[in-house]
Length: 298
Length: 341
Ligand SMILES: Nc1ncnc2c1ncn2[C@@H]1O[C@H](COP(=O)(O)OP(=O)(O)O)[C@@H](O)[C@H]1O
Ligand SMILES: [Mg+2]
Image 1 (cartoon, rainbow over the protein chains, first blue to last red):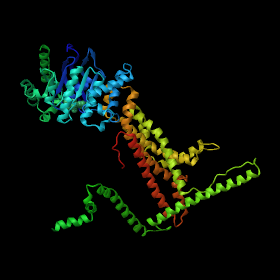
Image 2: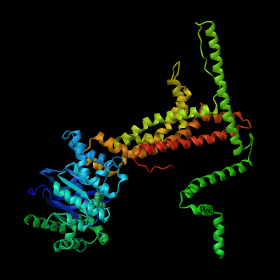
Image 3: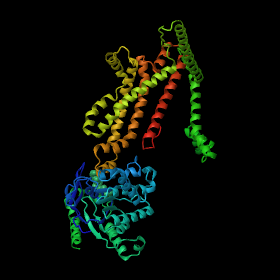
Image 4: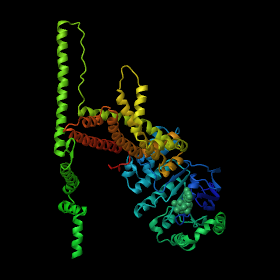
C-alpha cells in the first residue's frame, strides 16, 4: 500500500437527462484510494452509490471531473476494473465454468495456453468454493452460489480494482457471513483494490480499511470518511466485543440516521432542491473536502 | 338464512358450483398423485363430454339445404369412411403398379430388348394425401420465412438505424391479409417460374409463398424485440469484458433473444397454418383447403360431416404444430418456463 495515487476521483459530478431537464445525481465527489485498499461505500438507497461505482467502472461518464487509474483517465469499461453486479448478472445459458471462461478468454487471449486457461478457471472456482458446481447453470444453484460465481468471474480477470455493488445484499445472514469471510481471505491473498457498496453497517466495518459515507441526493457527495484501524485478519466473533469495533459501528449509524435523514423523510422538500442543484451541494461538498484533507494529513 | 340460500342458489347457476363439485369429488385424493390425475385428466374429459353433448343436441335443431347439420356420431362415421376411401385408393394404386410390372415382365420374357415403362398412377388425392400436401406446404413456407425473418430481426434489433428504416415497411405489410397477396403471388409465380419439367408444382409454390408472406412479420418483430431488449446488466457485462462485436452477439445477444424468437416462430406457424387452408380454398391449390372446398361444391348429404372431419383435423394439426414448436423451444432455450398457451 504505497501508491497513494493509485485510483483518484476528482470533483466528479454527473447529470442524468430527465424529462424535467438534467438531474444532478452526484456533485463534487473527491476520493483518493491506495493500491490494495478495501473501501466501502455506504449511504441511503438512491443517494448515488451505484452511480459512483459505474463511473469508476467506466459504464457511466462523469459530466464534470473524472477518474484516474494509475495515471490514466478512465474513459470506458475494461476488465482491469471488474464489476460484481448486484444481481450477479451471470449469463443464464452458460454453466458456472463457461461464465468465468467468457471473461478469462477475453483477458488472457494469447497469454495463457488452453490448459492454463482451464486450470486458471478451475483455480478461481476453487477460490470461492464452487468447484462442485462447475457445470451447473445459474438457475440450478442458489443465490449465494450465483454470487460466488459472479465474484469468481470478476477475480479470474485478475482485475486491479474490484468493484462490487451490494454483492451480498440479497443473501441470508449465514451465507452472507460465509462470503464475507471468503472475501477477506481472497483480499488478503490477492491484494486487489476493492470498492464495495453495502447497506450493512457490520459488513462495512468488518471488511473495510475505510468507509466512505455518502450524503443524500440529489447532488449527493461524500459526507464523511471513516478509517477502520482494526488489525487484520479480523475475526467477526472476537470483534463483537471489541470497543473500537462498536465505536466505528455507532459512528456509521450516527451518520446514517442522525446526520443524513432517510430520503423518504425529506422527499417533499428535496424536490425544489433538485432545481437549484449547485446551492444544495455546497455544504456536503465542504464536508467531503475537509474529510479528504483530514485523510491526506492523517 | 334466507340470504345464505340465495347465495347458494346463485352459485348453482355459476361455474363456481362445478368447481365445488369437482373439488368435492377429488377432495380425498387432493394431496395424492391420483387426485392430481383426476383433476388434470378429469376436468378436460368432462368438458369434452359436455361439448359433444351440446353439439349433438344443437346440431339436431339445424336443417340445411344439405340435410341436417351432422352431430358427432355422423362425423365419426364419415371419418371412418375417409379412412376406408384412402385404403381403397392405395389398394387400387398397388394393383395398378402390379399389373404394369406383370405386363412388363411378360414383355421382357418374349423380347429381352423391349423398352418397358412404368406409368405413374393418377388417382384423385385422398383426404390423407391432402393432409400431407398441406403439411409439406406449410413447412416449406414456414422454413423459408424463418430463414429470412430471423436474420432480418437480429439485424434490425441491433441497429437503431436499420430498425427505423425497416419499421414503416413492416408496419405497413404486417396487417395485410396474405390472401390479398394471393393473386399477385399467383401471377408472379406463373410469370417467373417457367420450366419444362418443374420440380415443384406452381400451385405448391403459390401456397408456400403465401404462407411465407404471413410468417415473416411475427418472427421479424419478435426477434427484433428480443434482440433489442437484452438485459442491460448483461450488456454491461460484455462492456466490462470488452467483448468483440461478434462474441457479444453470439454469446449474449442471440441466446438471450431465443425465447422471444420462438414466440415469434410459434405465432408465425399458427398464422401460417390458418392462412394456408384459406389460400388453398381460394386458389384451388391441392391441400386440406381444397378438400373442404370440393366437398362444399360437391354438396352431397355427407359433405357437411366430411367438412367437419376436416375442420377437426385442421384444428388438431394446428395444435400439434404448436406443441412441436414448444418442444423445440424447451429443447433449445435456456428459459424452461415456456408454456403452452
Ligand atoms: N440512468 C439514469 N437516469 C436517470 N437517473 C438516474 C440514472 N441512474 C441513476 N439515476 C438517479 O440517480 C440517483 C442515484 O442512483 P443510484 O446510484 O442507483 O443510487 P444507489 O445505488 O445509491 O441506490 C437516483 O436518484 C436515481 O434515480
Ligand atoms: Mg444501487
